[in-house]
Length: 396
Image 1 (tube, rainbow, N blue to C red):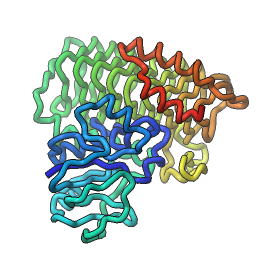
Image 2: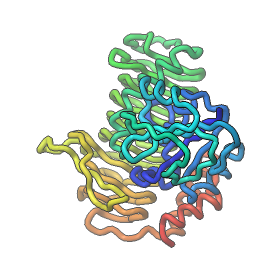
Image 3: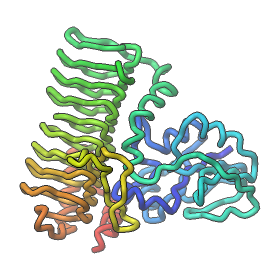
């Protein structure tokens, strides 16, 4: 049976992160949403239905995938927003041919021979079944489910994998059976790995510098660097090739992003190619202790995050200057460059440049020059397909 991971018409609720990637490629826990579904349902190959704006870029980056085309035969379509747990997995695996599960108005999963296209809603000749399976609604849901999924991924995937657990002299470990180290991990003296509250996974060739503390549940991605004296609190996932210092709690870094210096980041979602200047801090709790509101791209209005705790969401390629202050629930659009002493609050539109009280449009040509330099530092190029997608987002 072929497994197809599909984005539905709610994908814009995860902007700015999904302006440049599928919902399925959002990191949550140790894996991306798509990777977890593929592993749980034993997908034989990568097959996705995504926003047509992303198709050229995905075909360029993943030439062996089926992108917005599906194979013939029996197919299981899975919503990329699916909040996976054991009950949901069992309910979906029990689907018979020509049956579909719906959570309210949204399709969760459907088993059929039909070739469905991106954005499908009606599924003819299929028995509809109502389900209590949950779907993620917004990036705030992703942030608050991170600890659970780190633990689930550890138990279902990493616990039985080859563990290169070998502790250097001077490294302190609590609850070692909940720690998994990949090959090539480097731990400096006086590092503390505290897995008493949840598992810690440190992936291949990651480095943890002296006097750092990591509390689980936590994931440190491949080739990432944890700087001297960093404090990594539970619920934190750091994707590959990141540099992280200071204090981080309940936050997710997609990949290729840097927070090298002191400063607090809590309950935040950070895209790719983000750089936070020294002393950048975000608030994740209001002084009134009321639920935090955050910006929603589809409605162009603020919505209730459903939680007292919510920090910032920073789209790809966001840069902040030294001592930048980010308020609770702040959403910063893709490609923005922020600096100054005033507090940034609410919503900063894509490709903004300047201070909180005086934002202008970031010139697209100058933005692309910076992107090219930053990517070259990691041995990567800004391709024409990526540049065209960024141009469409910018409106130029």
